[in-house]
Image (cartoon, rainbow, N blue to C red; front, side, top):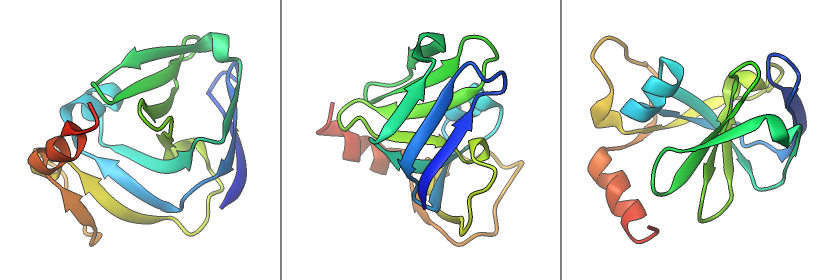
Length: 138
């Protein structure tokens, strides 16, 4: 999917993404569930992201490999950004007109609480697999 535009709830932050991968991921880690009150449904947006109203974006370093950005005016969760690559993952819900979406991966699958489940068949990575993957990137 190419060129998508969105904004936060109040419109203080506008985002233009050059290309969005329709295969989205779901993260079940405690950090994501605390941040949004639910698992984080994210589309990969690469590095070609233009953010207008950046003075209204607050960054929070949520792990040794990534930071989260949100609007300081309305609190909208805007992105999860990888430090090493500069790649953005953004909430699927920021883009209401995406087509061809497919749940492809579930991260921290061993941390998924028992009070919800998805019937989608996806790849999964456990905490140990993710920590091993990022060990050489920290």
